[in-house]
Image (cartoon, rainbow, N blue to C red; front, side):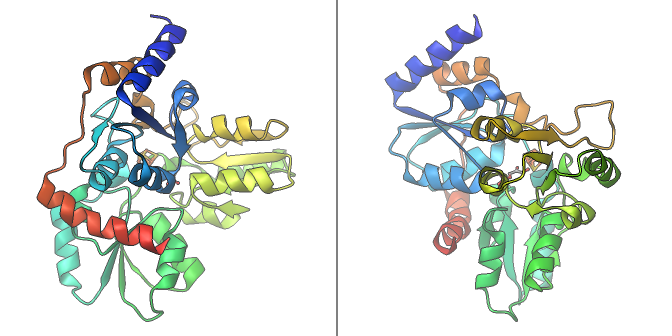
Length: 309
Ligand code: 13P
Ligand code: SF4
């Protein structure tokens, strides 16, 4: 089947089944093109909480589908590929995290949304990179806080808020690979370019950034800022929406440490294809299932996030 035929089938099935197709900014260009809604993790969670569709197709990674299912237990949540995980979520084993939490009973537990439902169940408040600063700043200055699993995001929040949160030592394999030297070399070659950095990148990269933010915050900065050129230090899928929204500007993908591979791509995010979206709508599978007792425990900290942001 051609790409055009696949797109037609997806649009027809979507209408017939009252399905909503959501996509993260790191998805392949052709997936972003057919999506009803594109967003960062926060916007995807908010949209899932509000939709009146019967079926949600979450084109992203597993924790995004799981979050949507926890927020909408009565809806069918489908994902194009059930194997699309997240190295950052995998860097936080629920049992080890529970033990860490138990060692610090006087701490409030704040977890990044890039976690399994089992980790969220041990959490007081979930955050995304789009609202972490605001939520941490809303807590009393002397509140003791555990933050996990992303160490780089935790360090960033500590630096901008002056907190001393206890950090879990997790990371994203894509964002950890960006090379400070390569980015400084790019800046030398493009002195007018501004540097946009996702907070999952290591601290030296955060420190040379003109803007540190979630995918939506980086897009917003590019849209409203007056520079003509940007070095983009995050997964390269974001370039599709940046170029679409800012046609007169130049966006340069930042290279990762190993120039031999496409290291600025998240292999999990790229597992969604048009073929898989069409098949999952046709077969209504793979479906995300979260055991109700676990879902109820994971829902509380997600709702807390939505209230606070
Ligand atoms: P955002 O919430 O900024 O879209 O990030 C999600 C993610 O997986 C980053 O790697
Ligand atoms: Fe997870 Fe990193 Fe991929 Fe984002 S880019 S989904 S944090 S592995």
